[in-house]
Length: 261
Image (tube, rainbow, N blue to C red; front, top):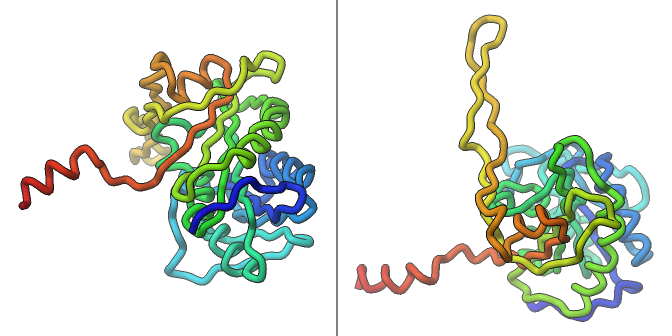
C-alpha cells in the first residue's frame, strides 16, 4: 500500500502512541503537538511502561482497552498491540493518515531501533499502511530531559516530512539532542549508527546471597563516525533517520544463491 503525500495536516487523522505508558510526559507533549496540527487526534497507548518491548505482540491472553476520554484509550499490552487495536479496531471506519510514536524518554539510535517499543509502534503502523514517525529525546544524564527541545523542533520536522514524504516500506526515526533549543545546531538526515546495550552485565547479590543481574550501560561505538544518528545527536543536531525494515542482506543474497545453485 503506497503512502499518499503530501499530507494536509489540518485535515489529517493522527494516531499517537508510545512505549513509556499512557501517563508519560513525552506522550502528553506529542499529543499537544498533534492537536496543534489537527483536530482529529486519537491516542492509544500502553497502561504501563513497555520500554524494550520491541515489536512484541500479545497472543496468549485477551487484551483489554480502557477508554479514558474522547479518542483517548489505554491498552494492557505492548506498543504493537496498541497500534494494531487502534488501526484495525477503534479507528476501522476511517484509518489514520499519520501516526506519531513517543516522545520517548531517552534516545533511540543505532541498535536501539531493534529493542525499542517506540520504534516498534511506528513500525506496526508502517506495516499496516500508515506513515509513521518515532520521536525520542536523548539524555546523557539519564534522568534529566530537555523536553523544550523536542517541543521546539517537532513541528518543523513533521511539516517538512509530510510535505516531501517517504516510501511505504520505511518509517522515520527522529532523535532530539540533550541540550536546550537555543543550543541545537540544526537538523541532520542520518544513517543508523552503532549503539549496543547488554555487553556489560552487572552482578549483585540479594539478601539471601542469590545472584541477580542488571543489564549494563550503553556502548556508543560510532560517536565519531560522521553521518550517523549517534554522531549527529552527540554533536547537538536533531537526527532524522529513514529506517527500512526489509532485513534481507542484499550483499550476501547473491553469494548464497550461487552456493545453493
